[in-house]
Amino acid sequence: MQGQFVAWAEPHHIVTVSDRSATARALLEDAGVGSRVEVWDLQQFLSTNVYEFSGFRSSGRSDVLAQLIENYNGIIDEFETDPSLHIEYAS
Image (cartoon, rainbow, N blue to C red; front, side, top):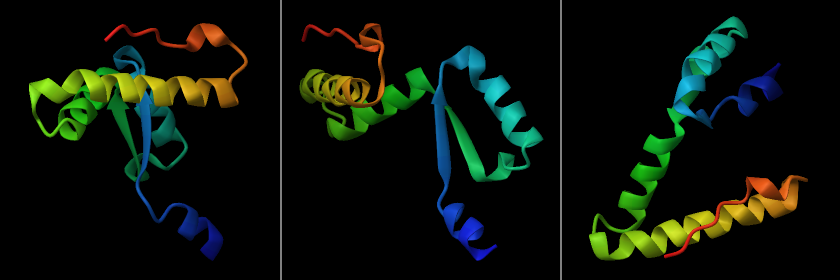
């Protein structure tokens, strides 16, 4: 039992497209873990991270977004079989 508690000791997050946020929340509630998992809209999540990591300077946003997309594409390369999930970005 204690191992299960430790697994949920940190807040968990689901990042999804906005029209699936309500579905994700409902499924989490049905599973009894709704209070332990936050659901974030993808656009809000990306915007917040780009602003934060650029130090809230407009001059750094493009570089931060390019790095974020590069990291995402690396995750796709490692864990997914569908290369169409890649994001193309011309900075």
